[in-house]
Image (cartoon, rainbow, N blue to C red; front, side, top):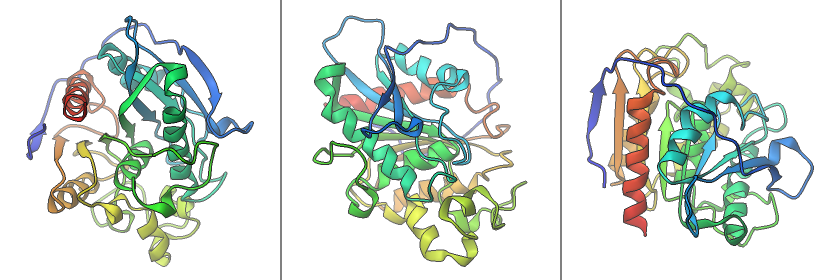
Length: 295
């Protein structure tokens, strides 16, 4: 279990060399169509086990890309450390904001989760535990998956495994937006209220003029006592997504008696000095602890 604390930490950033992982299965379509945005890759650890608990990774792109599941960056920062901790990793694509506006993106994420459960025997998954993690817009979608497990309108009708649950057991959110309406108030190099901001493009209109659509897309809208545990990382020098977004999420989780730990990195930016070895190790330990609690 995780402690209910806010940690402000400054660590020295250093690089760590490693071979990039290769998927065991790649470009699998989880929606039963031919679209690249509904593809996923599956990685399993180099150990001989009957099955593996699963972590889903969601890339960050400001919701503007539909094909970033296999970048070297996500392999190095998220996939490799999780494999080394004994998790199978499923890296997914999803529709971009130019493909479709929200909630298409979370519908895709949930379709991927259902696909994982529906094909557990085929790929050797232990679906008693499915965690999810992502950075920036991927952190937003990971948080949405965690907070909307039992919200029918967020399920969508994507894929062929609609009778399976899209519930996740734990969430690690790396500096994702959580309350679009206050992003500019907190200080940002991006004008999020602008009609062409990533958030406005996601919902299909200027965020301050579409309050109901924003509420639909904010993870904090759905938090309840059924929400799984969260671990949240954010750099205090983040100029793209201000760190108040993680504070708001953490506080809302705590208000609803959901276990949450917020790690604020004093010299962290939007990725740099945040997605580093020390914090990736914390992610691994969090998922392993939650795995033990859920099995």
